[in-house]
Length: 466
Image: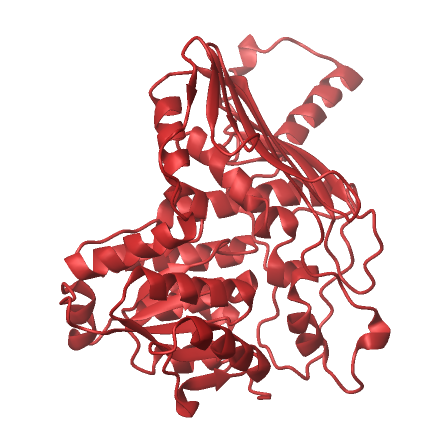
């Protein structure tokens, strides 16, 4: 197992230089913009070889029968070998990863990107996503990026800069918000946007499920294992790596809320959450409820839980003035109201469809860029998490206070009453805004043997918005 450090370049260096991403070589730029001939074998590289990454690789190989998996990168070599074993069973002739194309360590992503692949699948823990996305765009690769795209405001800005550069370079960038590619959901949201349920009045989305990767006890940590390696091995339990469950898992449901709201950002959010089940060493919540307010006073609720032994349900209910759209109660979406409807068409595998869209665009010389909506949904999820962590109402953008009235028009107030009004006005102006956040959860440089304190479980009312 490699003990390599993250040498090219650190997360903070990415943040400082993200507005000036390096220009591709002429050959790299040409390849990114060219139509791929049907006889040309597309070389796939997988970064992050766990269950989701292995699934993404299988879907990519199913999407294009003249594509091969030729390179793999992961922090740990066992992940690579397990993934190859799984994929080789399914695609014996198209998994061709030579020993020198298996890259391990925290710098493995850069080695893979530099190895001559055409398409990069990003499926590592999301705390690494901004760096990996930036490096792939720098190198002119077509990209599938699993959700979410960042875990904090600093990472969001890095990834958003990469999205803009990908547009300039005409690179394909497909997001892992898979429901946007689901046949039935596309039809349902088209009907929603066409007004079949009237004007939206509210939305409820739930994501009730069991724990994803429970934290092992501290006694299970091997002697001599550094903090960073222990945390990466148990990445879901640390907010700097996973973003917590609202950002990593329930962001799918929040993305569907954003889809319903035509990807406009909310005005504000209030939220609650906490940790019911002890999680020795980790610092994430196991339940959230966030109420987002959109323009027009529309309240959209998202609630999620990851606790064993509880009722599990993933639903979306969009209520309107003429009916409601319901997803998740039954096999197909349906509308109750003045115009009743139920999806009765063929339902293809949405994971396959998103990869088919990516590879078809590469073959045709077209460009798909899901960047703006994938980044918006990611930041809105972070916004909801921070409202729960801090216990504060959070605005999307800072309020602009109206100019003060001329002195002679102000009502005369004396003493304590005047001071109280000044304090109240100051309090309003200090409502935190997500777009002003400077939060940076990750360490600047990473080495498996390092000590790193990720911070305690947040305490609403004590934890501050950064």
